[in-house]
Length: 511
Ligand code: SF4
Image (cartoon, rainbow, N blue to C red; front, side, top):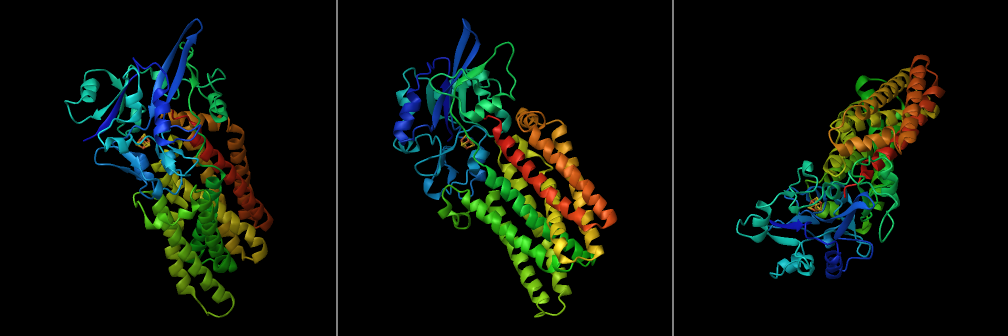
């Protein structure tokens, strides 16, 4: 059994009855929507037309929101309906990143994720969804798509139908008849100031400047819902914080394995950065939840397919390694423990994979955010590790000012910093300068290279480039101040870049 909708835009009159019935049935707060009617105007008055599109959750066969949800709050029923359980939701907003259709929102009353759930409570009583019942032109059809005798199956098989963003491979189960492409494709009709009934949200308006307008149809969206970015500065800061911690431990592990003496940078500073970076990451992640008091559901109601859950395990493992390393270092530095060379070697061997995982796991989490094509780079895991080594070595370079590190140690830190920073810049240029697999990624890359984020992006590249030069000169001359300056500069460069990366990925409209 596979329940689905068919929406006949040939007969839809754009009356919003479905929207109102849905809001009433589910007590949806003002300004939030489980289903809504999008308007697109084409042409120039008097030779203009208005197209309607009824948008909602597609009850995808392969639903990315279900995969990414860390607590199983989103789930697929046996009848194909993608439903949700507010009592399990922690408000992490990852489903909003996974959904390529802007179907989800955070309910401002419950602070949990919500969307069209097919009126599952009505379906269970053999009733049709509220929107189907209220539609005055019978434009919304519902039923079992796997039953060839059902009305919806006959409608879908006997007519030309389209779905939203089929290239995402999610298997949408909302089929449109007679829908104009400009309504279903969010990149075809940017907003302008000609909205009806309301004003476009500022984000859509800003982003529209980076979208091309069709010179023939001059399609523009005149009514839609607002979809602000789910993730903000806390995610930027979290990427940086765990990068510093993971990278510092990676560089310290390298020093231990190569037999290079970094003194207290290895015994105390690197593991302390590992502990602090993990703690800061944890605080930022929990504070970013809309239901922070439920954070432990990550462990007690885990969906182990979600990289939010796997990431929590990676953070815990890394925190344990860093904590043991720090305790050992304190013991050595205070003279409580004698030589601990073997123990440090063991910790270094474990520290390499755990440090790499804590730095890089976000690539897999972002990979599950299927609505954000900019984040789907196959190089992201390696780039995050390079970034971690860059800021981790940079932090150690700053700490070396006070640590009295030997020349060999300084050279190792400078080498790591130089190589990682050069690689970071080259990977940025390669990732953004090359061709992109999808139009969404192309639009996001355009915003970064030449659009609304160009100043910040090129500024971060310039700062990173200057840091690489300073670190290289510091490497050649062993001038500590140059190394420390480069170490500070890479922190600034990465924070600016991550802010651009996080925002641009979410700015491309999905509805
Ligand atoms: Fe609905 Fe979006 Fe989940 Fe697909 S990914 S089932 S459209 S919420």
